[in-house]
Length: 481
Image (tube, rainbow, N blue to C red; front, side):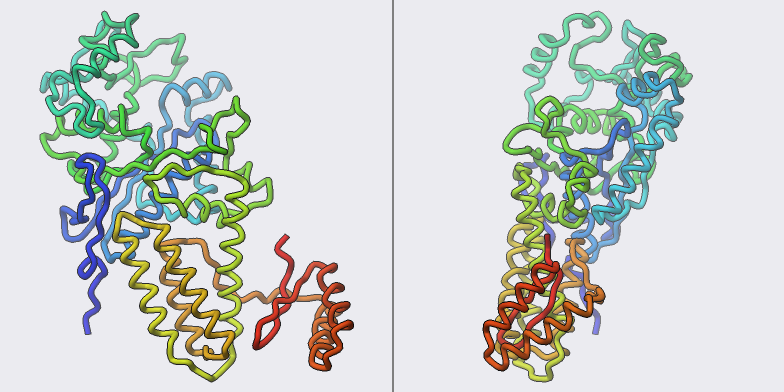
């Protein structure tokens, strides 16, 4: 019997920023999704606001595969821009020597947060010649020009659809830009025109520049993403993703230069993750609420707990980070891991006959929730409903070892999307005196010697363990704190 991929039975609908509506994902070629996500600028350790977006993008990537699509995913590394150049000059090192430690740290952070690796991580500095070629085509098409400062600019007047993503009015945009940028109006036709090639200035750029037909300099940030996306995925891609702050001007400029270059639609679907706040405020070093992943790890939290917190809010809703929220995420994960441990310990032969149907229903509802623009809160609720129902059956002795394996298999399947669960049995060696006290307490309870049972329970707790009692059994576990 042929098993149909989920996308053939349940359409995956995603909210397209450009059309302002949910659209069914139908890849351009052979059910093979081409995905581009804006990666980090490697001048510092990545902060949790960035990781809110990167975890959403990882969820999207995992859901695409969960629905049975093939996938090629590109995430760029911005290793040449104002910030990286400034950092390299300040440290007196070459550009790649400055950025390499932050690239390495980024990939370490991905491992800690269980973020799947993209198929390609192109660095901007590896595509300079391709960027120069793209600029030359735009100059030849007369949609770009050399400004008075020696830089090359894209003329937004030459692209009638400018503003199609952010839905900005072009006349208002020009007026606003002109009001903001008066000092360099002589350098560009319009203040809103954006740079494709930034002319070299020794005082600003040190010794960091590339030669080109337009003079020494370096590519503009917007051009970098367009060029790498086109080089690795083609002139039209299925999904382009980033944070909401990338929508304008970055993604708007990507559309203009890419479509002017190729004459084709650049991306079919655009998706944007909302901001992360910290205690209801914008994250800022000046406010003392700026956190990298390493800051949270130093406070005793692990990657799975941080991932769960950043994962559990829908990507189009602002996420308010608090340490109370992180503690709640920790407790939710502990509940799931306690459930997994309980399933691992099931030895019974008695079957209530309900587990398989409950698992199937959970997977169905989980899938339907994700199909609705990654509705993660509903998806997670279906899991905790499943936990509650199976725990109830277990308390009544109605779950066999075979059924426990079925339940675990269902959880493993959803974890292909969530990436937050551990399934290894806990074989931690318990000290002999604690194990002996646990056994004596069981006997005391059987003998209805409640005073001795309480005394032994207190002894166990003071030594870093606790007892989880159920109607059918009791389990010895290490304290969570």
